[in-house]
Image (cartoon, rainbow, N blue to C red; front, side):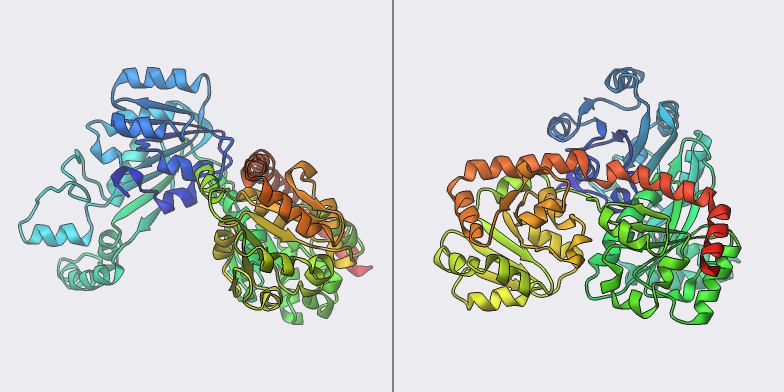
Length: 565
């Protein structure tokens, strides 16, 4: 991976995926754009790159690329043509401003072209880093081909001087975030410099803050925006970390990066119920069991906090809900759920129920899906406590995988029963419970996935998350008829099995026709990109939370009346 291929994970994590138009200054070969477009494929993404060879590569990943000097007036005339009347919603600048003679001019030119709520995420190297201080003390100021002493750096910045640069050019800095590497060595040097700081009457804590980060990432807006709404979210803590990640972390990260909310998420910890100005108190699958904690939440509701409880499985099958007599559902101002069927169930206890469907935070890249289609096919089965269903729905799959082990592999996650049934006679690998990230990585390496749900009261409330996860990563879901009925995804993107004898036939047909498989993979991927991503639906969730928060006083009256009744 070269200088122009690096993707700054901090910049990526802060980038607003609801942006319609994105500009990247110094887009290199398009690596950052490629990663961002996996999260927001509908964005119109343009870049400016000085090096022709890099700009040529970037054109494969961006909607428009200018190979030009960003400091020249003509470049911005060309940019205006490329934008074609659009305002910029998101600006990305990763380690570029220090290479410019006139960064102030560039920042002002871009500022003029930003939308009213436009955001900028900017990374700058920190010349106050401990490594440069050490070199200075040794009398060494030698330039290099890259790094803090890159010979092409025209300017050098610290945290404070970068903030001043942004503010002087019209930007409002919301916060800065350090990027620290080799932390142990940095702390050791900071301790040594602390002694000097005291002798010079300089705060050693400030010195440490300045010298530890190798880079600073600044998040700024075109103008000062309204104060964001605080969200305090508490999620369940289990070995299956996907639960809180899917229902809390993914959507709340989208809201955070939009600038309208400041979420804070804790897992299985009611000790940090919020204080301060009212905001939103959001719980997921976690229930206050003591009267003291319940009264604390009630007090927060009286103070103006909005209490939302999120439900994503049939509550009567959840031990925590039953044990606490559905208190979280009854006592919340509003309930968010993952399906329409679940909404109807929850309305037995609370009329204020809102459907927030599961969505996808990012998709696999086309090139990765293409590579997957060129190898020995892999069948994926990722499930927990689903032995009864796979045995009743698709038991014949065991014999098929054994007989066709030269033609197909099997990747099994969580559920050991299928792996045991194969008895080391098939080309199969078992993976115990994984982190959500590893689960998705294993899924993305596969080609087909078994989704053998059958009809019962619990499954009726399940979302279509597994279906859309498959499609988002170029995997064809092989579904029971019931699974297909539970999703809004059109059947043409699925392989639907009519009865228990159809699973092996469906797999056999897929193995016969790799061209059809490839087309179906990309068709499903495109469907998700257009319909089922948080980049599309984050704004809807933001509007829901904002409207509920504005209506908190009325919802509190309803809540008290409901509890009294």
